[in-house]
Structures are given as C-alpha cells and as structure tokens.
Amino acid sequence: MRLVRIISPLTILLLLLAAFAGSPGCANIIPPEGGPRDSLAPRAIAVRPADSTRNFSERRITFNFDEYVEVQNVQQNLVVSPLPKNMPIVEAKLKTVTVRIRDTLEPNTTYAFNFTKVIKDVNEGNEVKDFIYVFSTGQTIDSLELTGLVVLAENEKADSTLTVMLHTSNVDSAVIKERPRYIARLDAEGHFHFRFLAPGTYYLYAMKDEGGAYRYMKRSQLFAFADSAVKLDGTPHAPVKLYAYSIPEPPKPASSQTNTRKDNNDRRLRYQNNIGPSHDLLNDVVFTFETPLKRFDSSKVRFTTDTLFTPVTSGYRWEMDSTSTKLTFKYPWQENTSYAFLFDKDFATDTLGKELLKADTIRFVTKRKIDYGELRLRFRNLDMSSNPLLLFIQNNETKKAVPLTSENFHDPLFIPGEYDLRIVNDRNKNGKWDPGDFFNGRRQPEKVIPLSRMINVKANWENEVEIDVRQASQPGQGQTPGGRRPAGSTPGGQPRPQRTITDAPLQR
Image 1: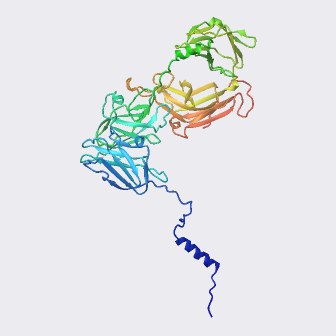
Image 2: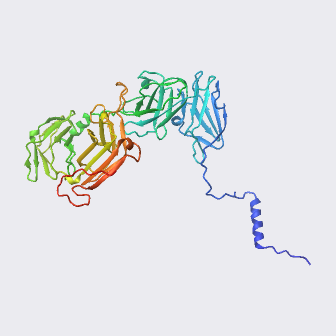
Image 3: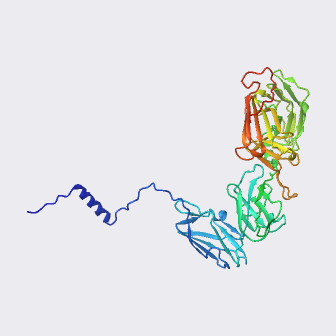
C-alpha cells in the first residue's frame, strides 16, 4: 500500500513564499518605515594632505567622509584666513570634497579653512560644524586667538549677519581701500572667535559686508570699531566688545520733474496733516506739503473753537521748517474740545505756483484726559552723572524721549500702549541717541542700557513701576510693578473726592 502524505495549507503558503523570494525579478523587501532619523553630521575619515601639515606646497586638498555629502553657499560660508584674493574652488562628489587653491600662498604663513555650514550630508542635511582645516607654509603653525562680542549700539541686540575684521594698517582709510587680513563670523548671540593668528598688532572692525567687498562703503552701513589696537604677543587677550551703528542717509528731495508732470493736470495745492479721528492733546498739528512753499500768509488762516467757530486770537504760533514743506501749529489744547482751521484759497502758494482751488475747512475734536494713562517710574541705581535720557520704544521707533533729572519720572498724560524702555548716556545733552562717527574723531556711539521688560500703560489708570537699572539690563530681572488702578479712584475702587492723584507706595 502506498502512503499518501497530507500537506497542510499553511505549509503550502510557506513554500510558495519561499519560491517567490528566490525567483528572479522579484520585488525588494522594504524595511518598515518610522525608524530613528539620522541626526549625526558627516565625519571626515581621511584628509590629504593631513591636517596641521607644515611646509605645505599643494594646490589641492581632499576630504573623504563616511557618507554622501554636498556643499552649500561656499562663497558666503567658507572662511579662509588670511583672506585670499581669490576664493578656492570647493566641489563635492559622492563622499569626497575637493578644495582647489587658486591664490599663490605666502611663505611662513598659517592658513585656516573654516567649513562651518559649508558641508552637509545629502539625505538629512546635517551640517558639519566646527570643522577647521589648518596648514602652514613654514615650520610652525600660529596659535594665537582673539574673542569678543558685537552688539547693535542702539539696543544691544546681536546681528549675526555682521562680519568681524582684523586689519594690519592703522590708517583710517584702510577700512575703505583695503581688504582685511583676517575675518570671522558671528554666532547667533553676536560672539566671534579668531583662531590661528600670527603675532602682531591689529585693528579690529565689524561691518555689514556688501557682496564680499569687506569694505566700509557708505555711512548707512552697519559699522563698529575698537577704540585701540589689539596687540597679540602670546599672552591671553581680554575679549573685546564692539558697538555697531549706522548713520542714516539724509532724505532725497522730491523730484521737481515729477511735480511738473502733475502740474499739467492738477493745479491744486496738496498737503497732508496729522489730525486723526481725535487729536492728541500732546501733539502739535503738522501740515506736510508735497512741494515746498514759496509763500505762506497766516492772516488767511482762521483758527476757531467750539461748534460756533469762535475765533481764537492768541496763544498759538506757526513754525515753518528749513525745507518749507512742514508747517507746524503749536497750541495748548483743551480736552474734548472742538476746533477748526478755515483756509482761504490763497493762504499758501508752492514753488510751482499751486494754490487751493477753493476755501478749505478742517474740523476736529481733541481727546479726553481719560484716554491717557498716568505713568510713574522710579529708578534705582541710576547714574545721574551720565546725563540719562529715557526712551520709550514701540516697533523699534522712539515715541518719547525724556531727559531724567532725578530718579523719578511722572507723566499724568501718557499715551496708552506697550513700550520697551532704554536709557541713553546722552553725552551731548541733545535729547536723542547719537550714533558713532569713525572718521570724525573716532567717536563711539552713545551707550544704551536696554531695560529687559516692556511696560504696559493702560488708559485711565495709575501705572506705577519700580526699576533697578543695574539688574533690569538682564532678562527677566529688575522691574517691580506697583499699584495699578483707575485714575481718580482709591485702592479699593471707590471714587476719590478730588481729581488730584497722590503718590502711592510701590510694591517691593
């Protein structure tokens, strides 16, 4: 009798899978997704010539990595010291990066190639950081260092797009005419670190580079300079702090040709004013004209109050600026009051002969005092000998500048909003922050102390804040909010019998 072997369905399925797996042209088995992401940067496993080579005379350097790599933004990111006339050519192929040197190398000189942000892996984009290749055309490798910090003088913030430079010439014009000997980039906090420097005397600058020129091209360019030369002789050098500033370019005058073309179709005198839905009690009225005025006759402008247009005959004055385009009206405004300007058609004529086509009237109402907040600031550790100037900043624009004559500041009518505070050492007592001027006596910008926490001034409230200047320049420290309550009320919220607001003790 012949035996019949019964094969189970599971056995048949396993045999079929094995057959398909071994057959030609079958699909690859893909491992399951979701594994850990490669977060490691490429690692150099071979370098020719070797790092720290002496008596270097090659024209090509080759780096082999442990994975596939590519290069990015070589011209912007690669830092070569000393600064070459022609940047080397850097190319990547598979796991190899090749550097071709185009300059004639100087004798007895240490060269450093900083590849930070230049090389990354192909798959995950992990960048090689702190990768510096060094060689010397002489017998020794220079090893001196210089560190420091660059901040914007106006607010002490960092700008990592600035470049730090070392010159060997002490002539001021070198920053315009010559390229520096060494350069360094800033990190996100504004720190710089020069390495492999030769002994010598250097002149330290920082600037916003314009297309790789490494030159101070215009006054509106961010620029910083050290007060004295940096002497490197082998002893450790203290970190250097630089304050970057820019000098705004004067506004360009309006094109007379453009105004002439408008003149063919429009004979009306055109101007704007700063009167909003309700006029600020603290502001003058300013009229800004498109074209400079040739003539202004104040007798042909009537200033009135209330709904009956009662004339106001005194207490005000007109002022014209030097460009004859801004006309300012100064007057001690009363709160919640109606005013009006009545212009005769020929009250003013611009340099193109334009006048109003007909008489014009501007009506407006002033704000109420309860639309403002009362602000009290009390400063501790404030250096009164430095001519402190208090700046209130919104969106990087100075909204108010107040010279401080004591450690207490009080304003009963302060425009509500959130403000950053800065204290300027106002050297020349001109009531504003002044940038530096390298070519005019090597004058550094005025020192600024940014106070770390902004204040929020609420309308119709007593806003009281105590600030320790020494601590407030550090984030999260130095400011103590005082009592905040509706103006004209007691701490319990009950109305005061009088409108006068007295000092309240600050929370400590």
